[in-house]
Image 1 (cartoon, one colour):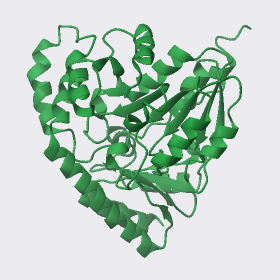
Image 2: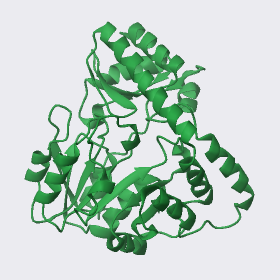
Image 3: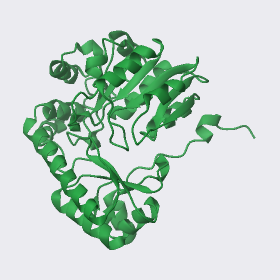
Length: 361
């Protein structure tokens, strides 16, 4: 029988999202669960974004602004870029798909470090292209290993900075040296979904590197810092030439009207941003101390999430925690079966995590 699809799709495994609280409570008949699995903002959405969204709900019978002009204009003022160098997406995930559909054809080649965000490989293989993965070194992206994977068919390189799931970062001089070394006809996708959480100095940022490397595509999102994950709104920066090509491929009305309104308002919600960053740093200190007391190894992070090495394997601990109403992430699908990943929650959620982990161990 003729195959319905191509080899790349046959090999794909569905992306494993964090289990929703409602689904867990329905399955196990429990209440008052907490979720620390999807790197979400525990404070909820930006209050200014919520007010802006409520002001727009009566216009839902109208199509959104297909160009996203006002959000792009606001982003342009925020980051000092012309709107011709900005593109919006239905979450940054759509922009990952869009750059692949714009630049990649079947049989071409892509490079990533691994473990990293699982969506890169999913999108590449669904396009019929080949993906090579360079192993991390001490939980950090090894740019020399990435360089060694480049071949004449390489069209795109994905770099996640900070990297998910390890929380590690690349310094500016490291990434700049890499960009100067690689062939100039390769598109480099720099995914900065968590860049706002970084506290280390001299960390590579795409805005500083775009003039150095014309085929750099920088991804950012409103899902994490601004708490708008449910609206699906992301954005990207690149040269006018690359953005023009992507807009030719982009579907019309891909960023909905509520998402655009919420994102514009969220950019002005400085108080909410400050509260979020303070909460994350205080939460990390508390969680690190609790794990040190338990004698459990963990990987220090530059994000709002981090890895913890657990006895009995990540999947087993995930299932035990689930029965206690605490949703975390096992790392089997990332090739790290001994680890779990959690994001920082509210203080009471962090305390419950430590208390429950002690119990299930």
